[in-house]
Structures are given as structure tokens and as C-alpha cells.
Image (tube, rainbow, N blue to C red; front, side, top):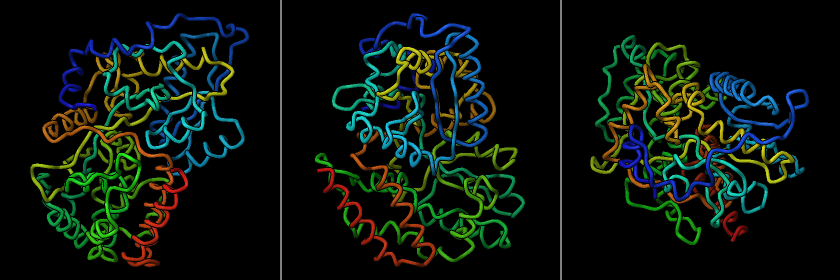
Length: 427
């Protein structure tokens, strides 16, 4: 499993331990097309306009250095991204190269829809061995992480100051965090709320389970927690729903695809730390700060490091060499690392970590992860088949809870039925 302490050391000095897993040396240029008639590959990713602009710059740099390959790029918001991929997969038309999420990797890999990247030339010698394992399914490499991230609580210090709310120090229980949300909501005058309902975020639920020494899934792919434990989690914010402490689900829907925090509706939000640049771009704030998530056990914050995204290729791509060369470039080129900085998370490859200058918000993300180093444990195993559907339904059922369509008991019953049915189908 991936050890965070080891990783932070490699940010500056690198690691030779991954060399044994290197797929190969740096790829030879190869000939897939010509400058006059380049081979064309399609690349797709999710994110906001900030990530899109950074990605366009990286693509332009690749094309400048690889005149025989043309990259047609497109992106969408995160909510619709994997719906589009599912439609394409059903029709046999996945893009050549894709930004991917760990939660869907096993699904697509076990359906033979992704290219085994161990069969093409991609340099993995600068990656931590244990991090590379996160992209492997049944011993084959289907995804390679671009970067890593950790969960935290974002807040806007200027917004708190304008409301007369004292900045939190991050040493808080759930009751402390809820009191903070109430304070913001009561002083926000209906324009600023404390947060969105954080109990609708699967990964925050996963962290809460870890704080209570409960596994999300068992080794044989079953749920590791009970319905009563899910009810306890969703009951955490029962006393806040319908109050100014939490922004209403109607307002959340109105500002989509921006998050409530990015749209300026809330003073805080729990999410992955690499969203710092995107939140700044969306909100127009001058500064944002990050704090550890709340926990009722000061010695166990339940935090871990997760591959923020992975690069994958379609098993049906007709330009494997061009796709591999593009993936290698996006993962290893130092200039690409400096384009993205920490907007995708801290670069996973040694070449990009050492080629990236961390200043401003990027330095803040790095500093945050160093501040929580002692609390970081190994990341969870790759999720079970169908987990992407479970995460989507987790958010949807919580949304129905916030709309008042379901009680906590009804919401837990509904989600457990979906989860158990799906697990049974994939058994």
C-alpha cells in the first residue's frame, strides 16, 4: 500500500524503488504519422475551465514536440463525464486516451475496454511502486496516476472576515464543525451558507468509517458497514438541514456545474485538496485556506492519499504508439507538470515533481499535505466493480434526503437495496 511519508520524501529526492516496475525506458519517438499527415488521437477529460485551459496548453506543447501526432481534445463537467464514457463504451467508441477515476478502473478493465499499458512504451521508472499498484487489475496495468491528493476543508478567510466569523484552526470534532456552519449561516443573511451537506460525499463517509475503524468493503467485495452506521452518518446533519448552516439542494442545483463553494454560496466545503486552483478560478476569491477534516478521535483523522486521476487508453485505439507517447508526455514531461502544478494534485512522477515550481496556492496545497502527514494511512484497495454507480446513487439518495423526499431511515434503506442488488449482480 502507498505510504505517504515515503512519498513526501520523493517530492525532493525521488525514489529508485519503482525502477523495477518501469514498463520501459523513455519511449523512442516512433513513426505513427508525418508532420504533413499526422496520426490523430482523441483525448477527453473532466474539470472546469481552469483545468481545460491548462490541458489545452499541455496538448499544444505535445503537438509542438510531436509533429506527427494530432490530439483532438474535449472535456465536460465531472457529473456527466462517465455517463458519456458509458454511452461510448456501449457503442464501442471510447476515445483513444482518457483522464480516468480510480473508482471506475476495475469496471472498464474487467470488461476488456482498456488497453494494457504494460504492452506499450511508457516510462514508469519515476513512480512509487506502491502507487503504480493502484492502476493494476489482475496483475495488468490499465491506468497510471497523474498525481495524488488528500481530503480537506476549504474555507474563504475574506468571506469569514466580512461576516465576523472567527477563522477555525482545524482542531475540531464534528460538533465543532457544525457549530462553525451554524455561525456562518446565522450571520450570512441568506446570501452565504456554512456549507453544502457533506454527508452526501461518499469519500467523506469513507473517511468517517476509517475514523471509526470500519472498512468500507470486505475482502470478498461486500459492504463492510451496516445500515445503522449509514443512518448514523446521514443523521450527523439532520439538525442542520433546512437551516442557513447548509445551502439548500435547490440552490445547489441552480449553480451546477459549479459547486456551491465555487459559486460563492458557502464559506466552506469538504473536498480533495487539488481543487484549490479550480475553486479560486470559479469563486474569484483572492485566497483560500485548507484545514484537516473534523474527527471525534484526535489521533485518527481517517485521511489517506488517493490517485487524483489516472491516464488510460482504449483497448480499441488504432494508434497505440501515439496514445502511449501522449500518455508518457502528460505523465513525465516537466513542463507539463509546471503547467498543471497542483491543480491535478501533487505530480506523481519524479520528473514532474522536480520540474514544478510551487508558489502561492500550489505551495499551500503542498504545505497542507505536509501538515497532515502524520495522520495519513494507506489508501483503500481499488473499489469493487460497480462502485461508480454506488457513489452516484449515494449522492442522489442524499439529495432526495435533502429535498425532503426521504427520511434518513428511508434513504438508508433505498441505498442499501441498490448497493446489495448491484453487488449481487457482479458477484
